[in-house]
Length: 258
Image (cartoon, rainbow, N blue to C red; front, top):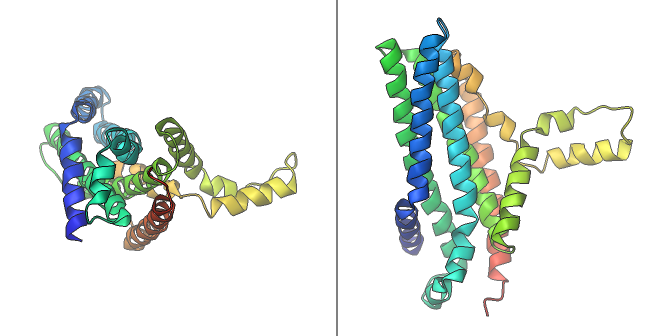
């Protein structure tokens, strides 16, 4: 695990040096500042506007970072020829992948924390106080982090056996499909073949269910989020990430590096 920590720390340092990351965070904070202006114009719903725009900015920026940085975790090392030197040392391939995953997840967590601080500063500027109901936004932010962990694991999986462009397309496609899991399970159409409907229902249980992590509406209105949902999403994200990472390790272990 010490070797995993070293790889994770180096991944974090590389991500911190990336100027694109700072530009994305700055853009997210700029959106929150715009939310304050829009919220002041929207009398009576300023808090709803700020929370909705703030959480949307955190989610979109985090998603862009997870996809575009995640797909380059393996291919970037191979292009620079640093992967071969690293694997020549006493570092197993699963330690390398797990370290990359943890390093990028740490980067996303810190950047999400910075954007969350900007969101709460915007709320404080408008309301002049932070109430207990505003704490629901923290649960929504936690769910965003869980969602980003899933995206990072998928991006890492695809980066192990395909090109960066295809990895981006595959990860983005699975993310979009995962937003419609409930619709796929409850699909009933007279114009669609029954076999296709059955296939979509089966696929809905394999695809990552990103819809469960969307509680922005509840956070914006200060509605309570059940503890059972928090526990369910946590366990689901942990198990799904473990399965995807295990698949990535299996593929990467059998890949010829010559």
